[in-house]
Image 1 (cartoon, rainbow, N blue to C red):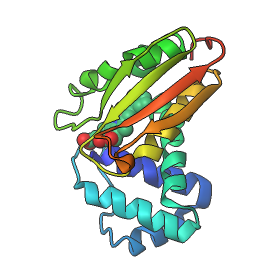
Image 2 (cartoon, protein in one colour; image 1 turned 135 degrees about the vertical axis):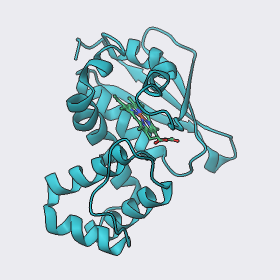
Image 3 (spheres, rainbow, N blue to C red; image 1 turned 90 degrees about the vertical axis):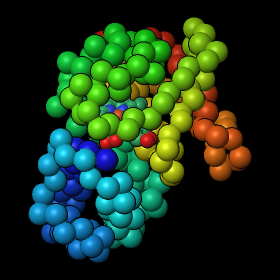
Image 4 (cartoon, protein in one colour; image 1 turned 180 degrees about the horizontal axis):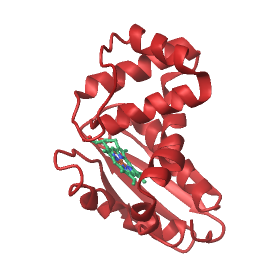
Length: 187
Ligand code: HEM
């Protein structure tokens, strides 16, 4: 994945636990890079090793690390670095979700080697929709949950998230039922 992802993990750990903890996590993960370059592609394995090592070092489960990382990604990495792009995704949370399937397409201009996830929306009603998440990468379901929670915070809209189908249950993708009470205001 692009260095931007590993850099965001670094930034999240340092902001919450300090530089020394980050150095410990990196050493345990046997990651030798001094720093990550945002627009350079790195093997996915580096990101997975960092998440596993953060989980071990901090005493959280890998899914807890991934969920926190998803929230950090939306509320810091994306909002601070790509605010205009994010705002262009929709004026309300339901609008953003409806546009999510094409969101990463725009990003391939900035990141030509992007291997993005695929999202599909079905059963889109006033206060609910089904979000389908397809990826070549295993194990990132809780990253998606964190991203969705981050979007809920960003749009000040309470979002209900239930995982109703998954690769763990034999499907070829994850399916979430998302529900909300009222449309949030613009970010
Ligand atoms: C401006 C905001 C965003 C940027 C710049 C961005 C960029 C990226 C980048 C660079 C990757 C790594 C993929 C690779 O290197 O091949 C990625 C992965 C991913 N993104 Fe985004 N993204 C943004 C917002 C979102 C949002 C809002 C969601 C969903 C709610 C999302 C869902 C994901 C997921 C699930 C992955 C993991 C890859 C996978 O599942 O295969 N992203 N994104």
